[in-house]
Amino acid sequence: MKIATQPTSKKTYTQEEAVKASLDYFKGDDLAARVWVNKYALKDSEGNIYELTPDDMHWRIAKEIARIENKYPNPLSEQEVFDLIKNFEYIVPQGSPMAGIGNPYQIASLSNCFV
Image (cartoon, rainbow, N blue to C red; front, side, top):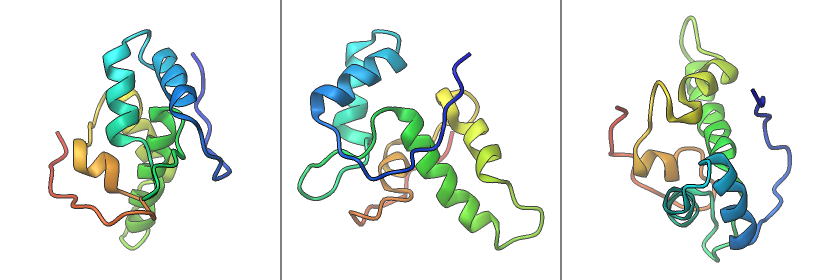
């Protein structure tokens, strides 16, 4: 099993690079890869893409949730949050949260729920 690592830079990716990497992540599912890149990958207002795969998005979300968790007793770590949301397996943040949590480039509604 491949271990996901946290992204360390603010490198940008082309649409083609992100779709190709996401195709690998989604095991060849073109629709899933394109929808993820077009709707949920971290982008700035000029359309620059900062995430290559959903793992990058999951780390972004985990980092922000862990930041809030640290304000309370018995907080979950960034790794613990990541382990819960990675691969869309245990907790799946829906559309708006996937696009908005930890997004420094856009103000977004987080009104969707976690399922």
